Structure formats: structure tokens, C-alpha cells
Image (cartoon, rainbow, N blue to C red; front, side, top):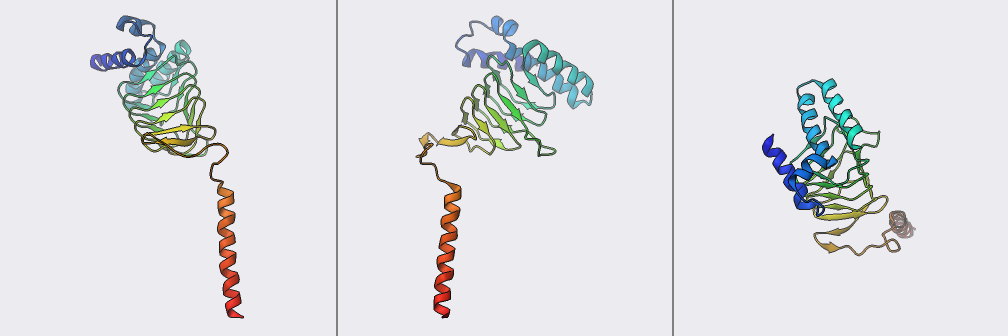
Length: 208
């Protein structure tokens, strides 16, 4: 646990330019307090002491404004920067070296059972106010823009923006899409139907 704490503090020092010392992070950072509390709560949750687990997580939520269900799985080096309003659901899984800003929700849509919350890969950054909803994966090294609402899988090494979110960059290459010239799925379906009608017309003419 001491090594895990050292890794968590080092992650904050590495990714938060406002961090001045390990002592400041340990005593004053609500994001670190929330991660530490979750690691304790998760231990109790996995050992079938769910009331105690929930008590720890709810006490931490009142103190920090960050609510992490004790059943969530969190890797090493999670940085919750500022953190107020962050909500992480029970079946969420978070990889290593993930950065989450204030107001982020890793939640469900209410339509799924069992695995209901997203899986976040390694080295992912999720901007302030973003909502990632559903049991899909956000790939390694991806970025979710502030305010985005992600409802479908995001490939590795991608950047997703908008409501609903769409991938605008993949592998460091910007995709040639914008709000005006985005492919219209309805128009594409109509074009497909027109082509099928043309084929049927030609077949009818040949039969005549």
C-alpha cells in the first residue's frame, strides 16, 4: 500500500503543474484523498464487507465531492484534478496513468445489466464535464474533450469531441470531418435504397 501511495503522489506531481510538494498533495488534494479512500473501500467490497465499503465511499464523497463506487476497478497513477462532481460507477474499470478533471461521469445509460459502466484504457485523459456512458471501452492513449458525451467505443490513440462525441483525430492524424461536412447516415441509406431501386427497374425492363 505504501508503494501504491508513492506512485499515486508521483502521478499528481508529474501531471499537475500547480503541485509544489508531496506533503501538499498528501494532506490537501481531494483527488488523492478520494483515490486513497477508494482503495480501502474496494478492499472491503472484494471481501464481501459491502456495508463498510459503502460507508467509506460515502464519507469520502461528502468530504471531497468525488463519488467512486467501491466496486469500481482503478489502476495505478489515477489523477483526479480538482475533482468536484466526479462520479465513477460500480462496474467502471480504469487503467493506469489516467487523468480525470472535474465534473466527469463514468456512468451507465440505465439500459444495461451486469457490466453497465465504461472501461477506460491506460494513459487516457478525460476533460472537465465529460460524460462517458455505457459498457464500452475507451482505448489506450485517447483523449475525451471537455463537455463531450461519449456513448460508443473510442479506438486507441484517438480524440473524441462533441455531443454525442465523435472521433476527430486518430493516431495523431486529424480526420477530415467538421460540423458541416460530416457524413449523413440517413442520406447514405437513401442513396443505397435508390441504387437498389435502379437495379430492380433494370431487371424489370429486361424481363419485359
